[in-house]
Image (cartoon, rainbow, N blue to C red; front, top):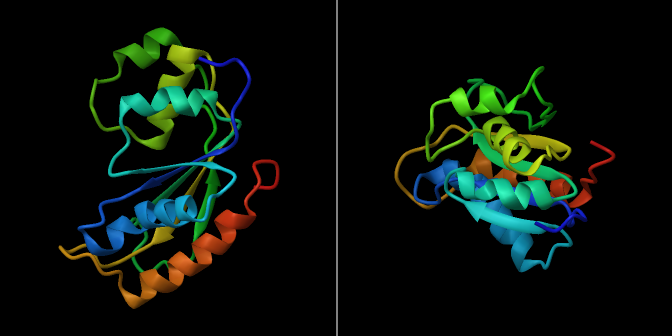
Length: 158
């Protein structure tokens, strides 16, 4: 792995075939088409293979749909900080899976590569998760707002 951190990394998460769930993926595709100065990945789920590019990045921004707060209509940009006492042994006791949370991937990056870069997650409120490729009107509006925020995002300002 390169010792010098690469540009910030944006990871857009989601399934384009599940309506609003694909919003993070779509944001990543939009930024990639714009030739963003960030490294941009669009993924359906977080997998262990992402630990290496995460460790190499100057900072990481995860972008995903959120259905955790019914009725919530605000974007949430949250820092992701290491929980106290990350150790190799603690991380290795965690059940192995091919699907991770952002914090789980950051922990894996720390264990494998010795680095937890500055990281945030942008959660976008959504409601429509049924089969289909179209975003709901609310998600379309939220996507426009999220793109504005992401284009302005700088790791030191979040």
